[in-house]
Length: 531
Image 1 (cartoon, one colour):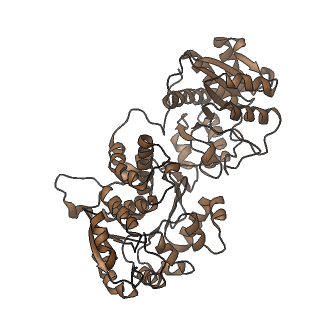
Image 2: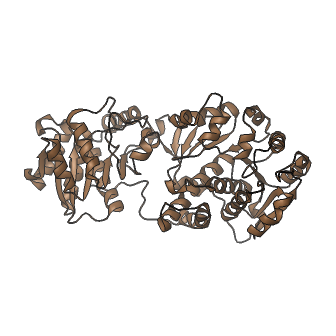
Image 3: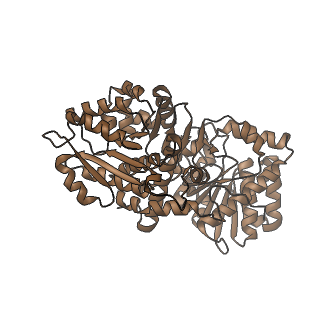
């Protein structure tokens, strides 16, 4: 997986690359600017004939911007640079790149910042904006002309490409320092920065592209980071290979304990998702009186009716039959649509103690463990839990959804380590944590997936991979990535508003297909030679 790092770690990588590997800073800058242009054209189309305004600060971020401006000019864009300071005040390397830009485009293409009105006029008369104002070193609130420039970028309401990091965003925390640019695309260099996947960074970064600028792999290997980014390349290696001689038994038997009156949809979606991700067989255990309803919804999955309460939820008397049900399955999922009926809650607590195979606990299974999380320690095989922030807050003492969301990475890592299990903390940029405290962040998914049932789909995908013999960590990461990728495919076809969980299920096979197709254009790793 790709390491996610802090600003200080990136600065150290730059230092080592320049002083130990003897790669000049200007070479790194050239590669960075080239990467910005490549990613910009991949995302927004050819720049020929378009008016592009590059807003450059005085430091190395501005230097990257001057490189991008020169290369955009070479690609026949109408390029203007809005410079925040005179050339005499630029950093040494930025000044070098300024001179190269002027040599090709002429001084008339550079506009020295004089007022907010001037900036607004220039930016609004543009097709695309490039934010090269402030880099990863920012630690205090943005003020003065830089604040005015950021406001002007926001008010222009044009596609914005941020260089390395949206200006005004803290590189480590993702918090806004006074004010910050909202980017359509952020092109970050070397390794992704932590702030792009936390707090305000999730909304402000837009799509994130990572550009390889030639930092020696040995230096990257030496960086200590417990946080990584789930990538397409890793997910591809996690999935089971399919041989001509395989049969349905090869790909496991997933068992799902789910459903109650009014909530058979959750069970059905989890079952369909498990099949769509490749499980050979899927059987759903369901309260007796809703079994026929579920059978009508499912063609390929099997069902087993279980004893129920008068409220048509699982009864405590179903315990022995459910233990036998779990024993006959390769992997199990418990939770979708169970309800919080007191007897069902008792049953879930008792079943948790019996877990001896790969398992996913979600939804009402997690609600049943509120105040009883010590039961998780009795599982012979560490389960995967998939809480949303509200469920996570109920599992953690003295937590609220707000405190969980304010430190998603820390919360997931701490709970996974303390309870010895795998945590998939759902939400924008889902966080996956394992018992040793290592964390992975998912880059796929979109706001259209914030709709009923998508969590049940994820649970089904996860148990489907577990049933195929994929280890828990790999199954959690792969299912999360593919779940988001399927959601992105669905949104591309139908738009985000009105997307439903069933749309995501239908795209799972296409997400798998795309994963195995070798593309000559990678958006998560780009390094073109300078143009």
